[in-house]
Image 1: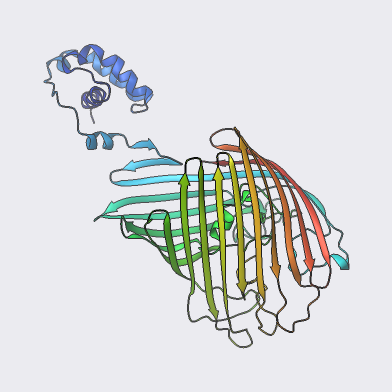
Image 2 (image 1 turned 60 degrees about the horizontal axis):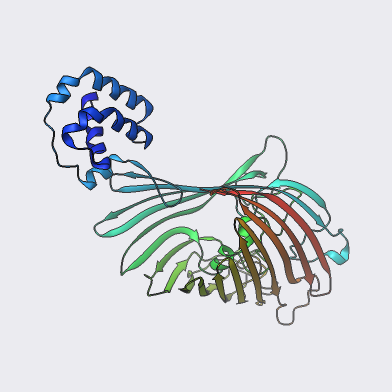
Length: 464
């Protein structure tokens, strides 16, 4: 737009925003332009150019007829192309909202495990064995950058969502943030593209999600875990990958990011449910062909009364494994329940899961024996936090159990993984949180073997 037009446009915006009377605007234009620059509507260069233009064109402006009516709210909205959002950084481009949000973290971690002797061998154990190490690494979360484009079309709220999860540590290949670590020169970190999904929904209908995103089963367990903001069990600290374990496998199974078609209901008071069909996962260690999808469901209820609030949830999962050749044929299934209660600065979480042919640590890991017989599993964790100003004190304990299959003899197979976590968090700024943490992890086998390790972590995590 020309300098005169932009000056008139800026003046009209200023009149609407600040209540300047039309006949007096020529005497107050310099002040109004300065106000617009301070609010970010005009850049420094635009401000200087308009001030010079105003000085060069006093007669033309004075003679121009002034329309007393203020611009419409929708017109003003279109002029404010860049604006703040409740979280992240957002831009409104016509009818489309484009939002960026993300996180970065890093921790110094010292991990000390038991010596590598026969009595410390536990198949599936998560305690460190055979090393003492220091690392600069990511915690349970790698970094992430999420990009979302949302709009309303034909009465439907629609959106495209992308989540990119890079880490700070070098990995064996470029196969993702969870590839094995390789702390050596000329290596590179991995990028895990965990989220790619579309949504459409509207009030009274709910929402449909199609694509790759976090699962329903065990979702609340990890999202409410204090180690999501820190390290927890260090796992592979000698050559760190871009994620630690947190409490995964030491109180809950990893929900994972999975291809899915999911429906989420609208909220009915505090009640809401979701149900979805999921890409069937193979049994770890076997090749199989599965003819039907997996299914997951979730039910939540939220409530609040004054300073007291809470959330209760229950989830279910089932998947048929058809196998191929000698691969096992079975149905893996499970459920979990949990609650989070808050009162002022105090928070409590209690969680329990139970599975048959579901495995441990991750979905369908160690879920059967070599003959295809299902193993039962269960686990729990309890957690408490207390906030004092910007400081939060947290502690948790959890266990994951794996039973032997019927008639199975396997003395070194994992019986229990467990851990204690003590944590301090300090809200340094609105974006940055400083974290200090101690974690004691323990693994026990069915035959009596056991191992333990201790990790100390300190660092920071940023969300925007």
